[in-house]
Length: 215
Ligand SMILES: *[C@@H]1O[C@H](CO)[C@@H](O)[C@H](O)[C@H]1NC(C)=O
Ligand SMILES: *[C@@H]1O[C@H](CO)[C@@H](O)[C@H](O)[C@H]1NC(C)=O
Image (cartoon, rainbow, N blue to C red):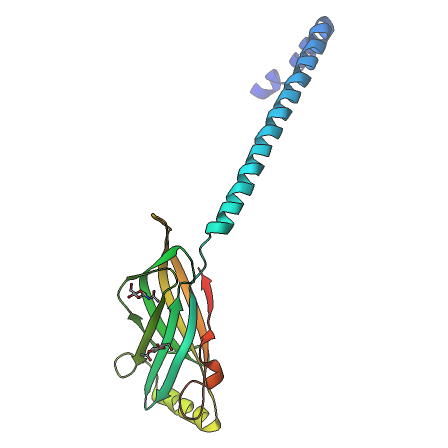
């Protein structure tokens, strides 16, 4: 009932006479409108141009200042008698950018996915540009979660000629660029490891570079 009474006829009745009376004003209005569109188009173009220029300058700055992720290498790995020893190095390859390591954790996996244990290593430290840090340690009685069956499998693989492991170094780092510190990044280094019958890293695996990714 309410809506029935309000909706019909009213707008149509007013619109017709209005249009006739104001045609001149209507065209003037349109000319003015097209002028404003032109001006706003010009302003838009200028703003876009400036943004583009700023973008290019920032890109060039970023290219020259951008931090390179640290490089990780597997230097040593050995297994025997329910103990695993690992040695990984982390190198800051940046010319002028330092790296804060807020935490470092090492985990060792058998065949990529069976976790044999892990531990936090090193105290938080600052790594100067072009410096290398050794991350070496052992998984044994207190720190290893490997089962007797897994040690047997490892021994059997060794007797057959090769055991495959994976060392994962997880760290939280910040870059130090001049006096500015970046936000924290969680970084993973993945090092595939192949061990020979003698229980130590195969010679062609020594100093092999690990893959690094952030998340
Ligand atoms: C780890 O490897 C580095 C580089 O080869 C070596 O300098 C260092 O002495 C090794 N550390 C241990 C504990 O094996
Ligand atoms: C790496 O940093 C340590 C500690 O700051 C320093 O003693 C060592 O000389 C540095 N090594 C190189 C190669 O710069």
